[in-house]
Length: 435
Image (cartoon, helix red, strand yellow):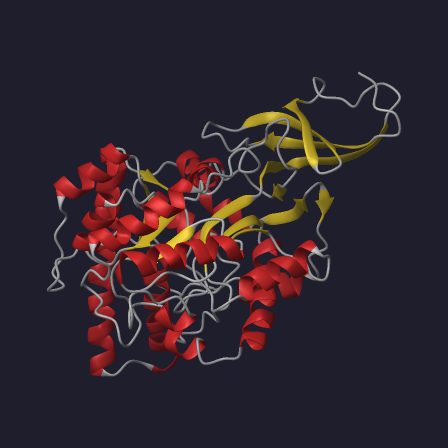
């Protein structure tokens, strides 16, 4: 097949991970034309057409894999402990600048696709416009616009409170009109001061109005659930992804409800457990303990957070063993979890029972599938976008090698990532004796 005037990149690497869930293969190659992958295979089997202009890039001791897909981000956040109620007080212009800063961090860390889980007003739509117009750089963006909330509910301060099936349906239509790729629902309370953390928010008929309208237009849905009843209600409404998926009764006690867990598996809903956002709070307290010590109250808080994290890991392990589709979504920059640190969430899934291969799949092919974006990104396959990462080390042998990013390619173009010092500053370091 002739490609007159075509420009190709032929990328060779000592190891290739295709993002489809299997082991790595030695001596891999990817052929790129423009922004697309043309061919993937072993070196010697993949080549540009005869006579074509080709640039060959060799990474003989490195690993080539798909760009990571983070299924849960908050780009308007700061990741320094500020709660959402405070973030919402900033003008949209400041939050858009902060989102642009976070987008660069995410891209530089090897995350080439993000799903934003709830910014203020139109901030992320405007950032996506700026990226598409070449004014700044960032990952591919799968956006919900504002999260849909009850009045006074979690994240309602970002601008999409609604009451009753008519209003929730209308809000869903409005968000789709504005450019939403999916609909985020806060099905329980959360950290928002006026919300009730453990209690369901929307009634099932309100949830059904949202999911029915979203699905009518081919838009998936995802529900924030910090209690079991919120998850059960979301399953009644056929929500496509359960976020956090915390198994707690309304009184706050932990209880792994096997019936609800079995429903998650049976209905095929994805689970985004957001484990590291809880661990990030623990690390903040442990860092403080190392620096200056803790008060009695702070130590009690740390002890409780450690117990809760153990429960979350165990619940996630049980979901994995039952066959739930658990994927990586970081929840950064929420709470104490800064953007650019997605690898920590994949690490937590390995702590919960995933193999290294499954951990990589959770942040590549399966994460892309959970967003209905697997026709474009997530795996190294002909016809997909040439979003690639070069690593020093094989993450299917040790998930921590996701940190060792050497190069990032977005749409076939190598990203200029700045100095090694600035890149090193993106990573949040664990405490000396942290979990």
